Length: 489
Ligand SMILES: Nc1ncnc2c1ncn2[C@@H]1O[C@H](COP(=O)(O)OP(=O)(O)OP(=O)(O)O)[C@@H](O)[C@H]1O
Ligand SMILES: [Mg+2]
Image 1 (tube, rainbow, N blue to C red):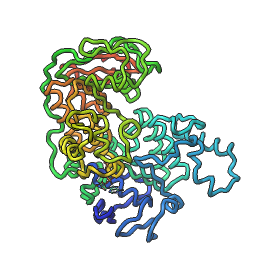
Image 2 (cartoon, protein in one colour):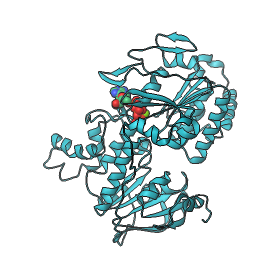
Image 3 (cartoon, rainbow, N blue to C red):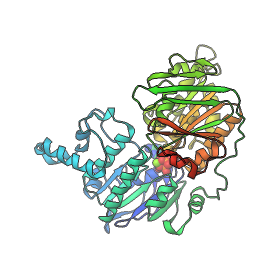
Image 4 (spheres, protein in one colour):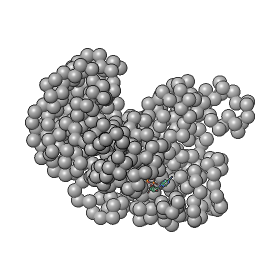
């Protein structure tokens, strides 16, 4: 199949097949065409050229509704839930219409409860979707896709916002579906998931299919090479840490929700401080609390020896602290605005941008081009809406925003979620550049190899508390992992 968006070739004569009971992974850099391919398969938009058949019957075109009727269900990167309706209402949206007004609410409730129980997901049925966390929304999306008992299930980066425990539940559910003969198309940037879950992998690059391989027959390095088109020898740059003055000092910090309890740590200029732990252990909330996004009930936040009485994002930004949220969709970006607007959003007070009473449009374009070039935004279309970019490229727009001016302290929460191997290297190099330039960088991530390779010290969190601090020579996975579960190494 070939797909063109107003002249841009997003997919170029790609062949793809899915067998009964198979988990088929799609792998490729940001913008390679993975989401486009699954959108064609799910009937979201028409293909430009090509052929499509299901069970040997060819289809001349496909709509989302017909796709659902023939048993194809998809969970996309961008959610399709209606924010103002409850979980229950969202789960049965569409079904209500097809069955007429006779579907009883009590029946719906029972079916929905069973479905979520079977998946092992805990989501309150009567909660309005707008109030759910991103992980809960993801769970509702997955449950909704499974409600129709599909023959083909498509999952586009489903674990990007799930905790490790929730992801395990999803993997269990996938195994049960696979055993029942359901074919699953699985998109992920996490090599470990591709390795553990998939039977075959199809690699896309620049809209073209590079190949389809049996997972067991190829190494991770081999897959990465297919993906980026060259061998990748060095993923992590060597960072020269020169710990200097204390930039940030947190003492006995507890958040109102109890997500962080009595946390104390220091971070110095010229070093990367890592926060490790399972998703949900409190690392994200700690970053948010420091930046003033999470109410604090006790404890102090000190910046360069000065106590910050009431941390708030505007005060923190003014004090040269910058924060990159894990959830770029709901906290980070205005998706319907252009790249240019999103990038300059937090920096409109910058002298370089606001000379004179009028914001100088061309000036603005020049200033934002540098960070976006450093991060290799693709395509480099500054006036396009952020929503028209692939997921990983959206992440780059968010990162670029914080690079418009120098900060003293950078808080990164899951900086490489959803971005491809090549872009990860760009982000690691960026962190290196910041730290070697004298900044204090704090990285919270679920990718342990990132911390082992980038951080000078690592704090491990478990159930809201900091349970360990590990220095230079105590940083093997074997030394760190036991702390993830609250144990001692
Ligand atoms: N609605 C659209 N309008 C214009 N161009 C689009 C649209 N959707 C996708 N594209 C372009 O098609 C190409 C493929 O994008 P796609 O979203 O399929 O990438 P992807 O492989 O899913 O990447 P990621 O890993 O970042 O999610 C990109 O260059 C993207 O900008
Ligand atoms: Mg995508």
